[in-house]
Image (cartoon, rainbow, N blue to C red):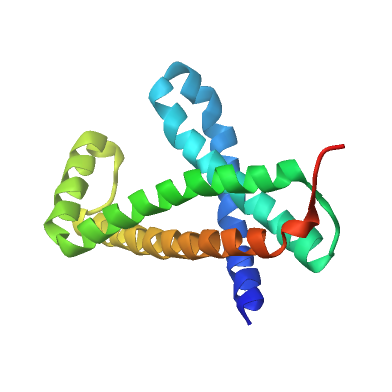
Length: 166
């Protein structure tokens, strides 16, 4: 039963990891002219790498019963830790925004002012879209957190699948 839940969560995370990968590749060049973008790109890259490596662990290791390199376990662990930090930060931010709706309203107002006449949407509609994004990232972060915890459990349970370097 738990493995079925893990499998479902893995397949739920995959499309977002693909989107994150595409976003990272598109914005990477811009990050060289704006170094402040490197941290968010690093975090999104780690989430994508974690998702793909845990998917590989599920399909080839657990389901396929094939031996995996020891480095695969390390890739999962390291990227899981970074992904967990990101998920906790996003969850905290989303909870704060949902508990204090005025915070979202103020942020929307400020974004609208910064965009100027380029943003052709009413403030009320923009706030609705932002609220949907907050709910989406809340759910995504919680799914990611549950998946990471389950991954650590399965890494321990299926430790025999990881062979040592010869």
